[in-house]
Amino acid sequence: MSVLFDPDDRPEEEAAPEAADYAPEPVLPEAVRQRITALAAAALPGLPPDEMPVPLRRVARFAPNRRARLGGRDIAAQLVSDPVFRQRIGGRIMAEAGDLGTAVTSGVAPAAADPVEVAALAYLARPEGWRELIGAAGDAVRAEADSAAVAAQVRAAEQRATRAEHDRAVARVEAEKLRDELARVREELNQLREESRATAKALREAQAAQKRAGDLLATEKGRAARVALDHEAELRRLRSRLADAEATAATGKQAAKDARSVDDARLWLLLETIGQAATGLRRELALGPADKLPADFVAEVSADRPGAPERSRARAQDTDDPGRLDQLLALPRAHLVVDGYNVTKRGFADMSLEQQRKRLITGLGGIAAQTGDEVTVVFDGAERVHGLPPAPRGVRVLFSRKGTTADELIRQLVRAEPPGRPVVVVSSDREVADGVRRHGAYPMGADSLLRRLSRS
Image 1: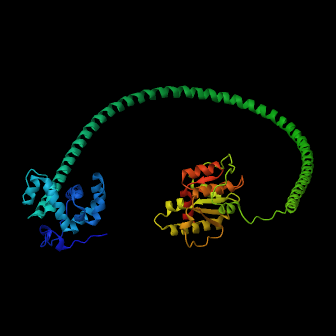
Image 2: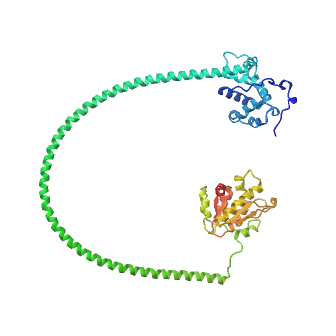
Image 3: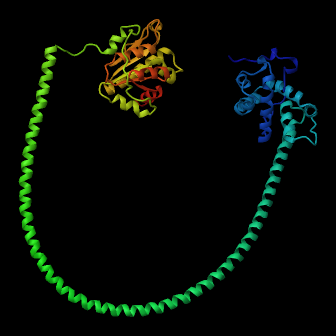
């Protein structure tokens, strides 16, 4: 609740601070602005709650090392807009400043004092000439920045001179290396000339050997021509034999095709016989479509049945993969069981319980319509729910009865399903996940369902 300060309720010394000062706020140097925020943040917890502006009461509860960083903007805004708050906080800060605060209050800036500190205290106390003190602080900060820039330029020039001297030394070393390299190249050139003369002699010898090889090649070509004629005759005989073999293979393929057709006919007849046998067995046992699913029977019971069997193997390992839920819902005849409030309080905590239930049930209706799966959502406390709207098609809404919890009802739903049916339980409760995994269900985190609903 906001608090309005009535000028008639202020103390006499705070009744009209700076009543005649209508000049705009000065532009503060960044260092001065940060120092003012730090001083105000440090002194803020010392103010009584009724003297503290409402926006800063939350900031005053921050840790000291976070107060100026997280609440600096709110503190600065209150210092500008609320003169009474500035006067109160300034009084505490000036009292803690000691002799420096006394000197600044009297309008005097000690020569040895930090100009940024003097400007910050002057802004809070606002004695005569406080704007000049802030301006002097800005000049001092800018002078320090200029001095730092000049020093940086001097250092850069010295570094450039050092690099130039180093480059000259490196150039001299490189020149010596190049002279040595030139001498080495000249020596290699002389060696290459000797090798070239030896290569030319070898080339002449190779040309003579090539001429002799050409003569031998002509002789061998005559022999090869005769062999080629023999090979062509042999090739014609082989082609004739290949034609005969292809005709035999074609006959074999046709026989295999006929045999496969016979096998297909036998398989079709076997499947047709099995289908007719299953139809006859269903007719003999008088089995019709089930009016209720296993979860409908669980909804009529308020507690676990004693001695209910547990399945020994789990259907799948727990996973946080967002695509895993889509894969599980794509399984045939899947049953999606949702821990209602565990999901809504994780995704829609800012809504009322009625709005949370309505939003979750509507989203689950979309999933049921898209996948055709059976969907059951379980909430705690049926006695506290009134006027629940009808559930969408394909969505079953259950509430735990007095004396039981939604977790127990979820475990009953999982135990009621036949072995082999895929059951997906959505809950971030580790105890629920471990319990349904022991009964063969697929546990999934609430975030996976929330992301699935956000895509719908």
